[in-house]
Length: 638
Image (cartoon, rainbow, N blue to C red):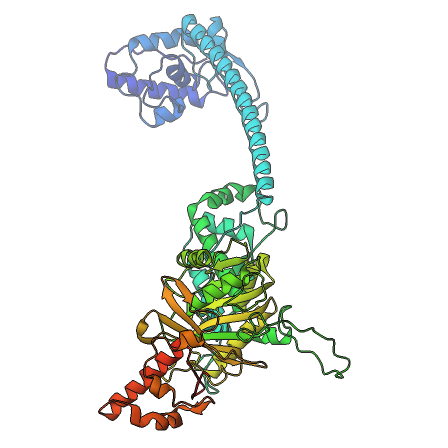
């Protein structure tokens, strides 16, 4: 058995060198002489704690790294080691990972606490420290158990929270799947602008789709997600189209290749195919609550309405809508069902089944005349119009002129009714809803708005100009207006409209306008004075009233001069130039020919002054009802 001799010298360098030398001897003889080996290094490390700089590395490694300084090994340390060394005894134990004979492990027999020294675990060299270590170990064990319990509780709470979250998301998904939007009320469409868009429907709808896409892409992500969950797509612009010209499409127009555009415009009904699930429910809900969603929904509702209104003219021709005019095939004359004859609404003035136009210059009281006529027709007590028995019934008066809305027209109507001594009948309705006669969509919409008041006796359109898209001087525009009038006549016995004059004093418009009328009345107001005359120029398939209606304007009311405007008492009272009047023939005579009969009686000094005198006399006599001027002729009332 080898013995480590005591180091007698106090030279630190010698002690350190001697320690290395002697320990190397024990290390090399460990298999033969089991007195001491690297346990010395472990003893230095675990018991004396001299390798503070590297507490977690092995003693051998620490020594090799020269962590032992000349001041490390003192005589006291050496003496302790010599005493401890005597208590070593060998014990063979298999090292984990090695065979049972590969490594020899030494334990200390005495004292008892030294027997628990293990090179893998540090131990202090006194029982108090060991007890403290055991206390710390017990505390650590308790802490581990507490941590494990806390982890278990936390996991249970997390599972409970997840279950609650799953239930919440499931309820939210179900609520969103059943969510139903409230309808959006949009302002009325400007049907004149719609009429322009319908000239080139494919281009208009492509422009709409692009405008929609630009707005959609600018939305926040959650709003886009919500929108796609609630609205399905339609495809717009799937086929190439010709670039439109200003009026008619040019045969040589450049062909534009268009890509189909996908737009989400069709609402998905509740509980049908909505792409809503747990992972996106909260994002969809936040998008649904975003004010941008509400604003975009209003915009999209308008886009979808306009897409539907523009429609496709080709499809309308292929498959006409239900309310389109449908001609009937030819039938034998004896087989045709008798449609019955409707009485004229105002005999010799307003026939049934057609368009009556009241024309004249601006501010000539055309609307005032129709106000009085409408009040009488709507009466339910048998009122007469200037002594004429009329057909009574409900009347819808469309006030379309700017500045003549129904709120403005109402007091005028009430003043007329009061002056006539009539009571409210509930059959005269005013509306300023847009109506464009040559735009079928507009007419259909107008009829739908007023369906509770239809059918009716008379529809009044004030004015024809305001109810037309385009110029009535164009034949195609007039033809479109006639189609709109036909649609109205399916729900009313007659249509009357206010219109203005051309420069020659006749009705303004295309040559097609005249043949489409069943009656025409001319309103005159000489010098914008109080006197107003209304002459029935024409009644189709009937007799026109010979005597003009003669009125004196009193505020909004046209006060009648009497049932017989041409009676002797009224006719000659205050008549200008009765000597010239007496020379006029009683039969209709051309105005130019009648002029020759009275030329020498005119007092003007120049041709121009005589022309003006002759014009003023004709207006004066017509106003007083003593002559009838009609279709370029004049005759004296006998």
